[in-house]
Length: 287
Image (cartoon, rainbow, N blue to C red; front, side):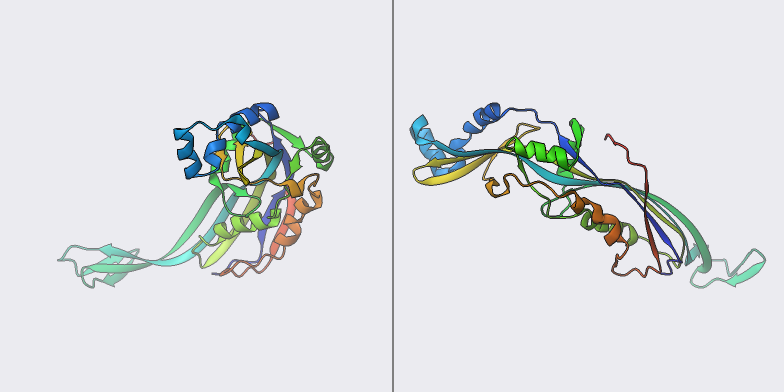
């Protein structure tokens, strides 16, 4: 595939948001306590049916409120290109020859092959959420975008951490998730000559969602119960992040998407030149 001379990629300014919590620590602890028995496994649950556990059997040894990160990447792309194809024109059994645009063509096996040049234009949109720890797509997190948010910077995150909230740093950078989206766009094109390639990343945003975690001890065993600070969903078998306590994201981590995108190597695509710019006006997008 000939991609022409220039691919234009525009990147929005990276931003950070904190999703507004729906619970207090005490409220979350009360909801989590209802799942303490379940957290210790099937045998403990069965035993709980036979004899109700006493309150003093469970010791709350640790609790935390943490902000867990995920990315939202949105983009609009336009691809204009040409490709040569052969279209099959099927004919009635009695047809031996056709004339098209003054040119005669013989029928073979009741058909004629017509070589054509297809001029194509595609307009593509992407709206993808990623787990910022694993870097994997996480479509289930898109529902969290319906909740109210607060725009934050590094100083605001530092203040939140100073109040005792765990700030979990992302392991996947902006450039990693941008590259994944860009690769999916490029791999879908079937072209002999690309005339226009414009990709505008309108959002490269890092969201922090609130999660509560409670670690209980019972008979020298420990188990964790988590509560989603937005939906109120409670689950067992979670984890705590005491080791991250007081850590704050270095905002320079967000600002590498443009620098790394300039050196993108996309498998199977020969890019003659990639132009990357911060050409998208920063604005707050609401789903």
